[in-house]
Image (cartoon, rainbow, N blue to C red; front, side):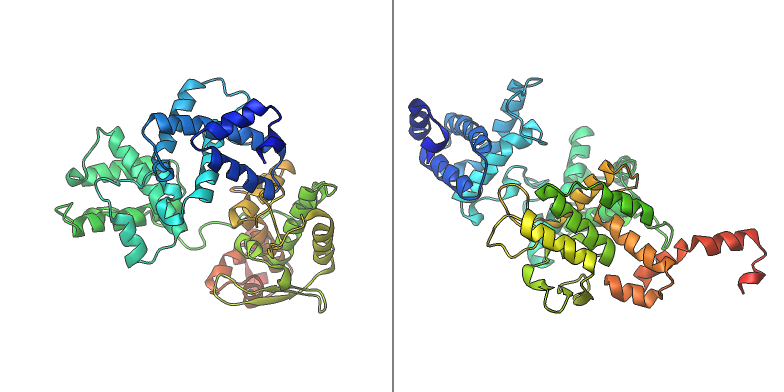
Length: 422
């Protein structure tokens, strides 16, 4: 397999002579099966060769020793190539990510899941001082990996703040230190995000107190910012801007066909990115012109009539834009590996399309189009109950915020004494 990508025999011999040579050749075969381009494969192999040499020089003797070497290797490379990463950086990636990515793929392929995790690249925050905190979250609270990652993100920021304050020990924490951290964090976070950070910090502080690492429970000193229901408007765009968005998609390419289908589905049905990511081929009932959304946020399912514009966009993508695959997910990555798109990837693609169309909106993403769909239904005079059922709101209060969007009635009220509206 190596000879397919490296024409010089000495290059192939050098790879096979490496102590990870057999593993690297297996990795190359795996990428080839997934449809990776030759240029992409040839760019990854030298990174793995350098990593293998570095790991061996620093005491690695088996595959299980590799995860702990990754971050040190990346840092050495960054220091060596500082200001000069020509030829190393992949499209759209930083140099650090370009280095980590093939190593992560290699470890995914070679090591059992219990031997390493993505967190081996970046240790859990406070791993030495509080080694069992994340295990407790997983086992006692049953938190999912995505939620654990969010805890780690917030607590990693807290860890860096303490280090910046002169390596403040957890046992010497005080309300003043906590206040300083929250003030510093509040300058970069929206109230909702800051509230989540406060919630995670309170749980961490309670755990420290429970385990005897803190003499007092400092969680009572962490107050979340006050938030008011209906205090903000949904981040929707106008229907003219929807037309502008759709018109700006070049549907001659496979990516354009896929993104156009995504945008039409989001604006027509107000779906969430997760619901699109979970959409499978069997959910498209062509015989009865129906679209099934089997797993909504509230645990229920929805069935929609398949609008002609949606059906046409999907047919065009499935027949001409979607790569041939055994995957049952409707929306796949446009480049190898041809795996299902994640909800984050879908939201990112919507944000990119909004930006390219020149449409300015706060926090652009898939929810922008969900809000736009609901706003359109409000303007057309549908009841809040009907709208909530249509977009899958599990509680009526989720739909109430859109009552603020009847701008014409509000404008008339502001310009009159209000009697005419009674």
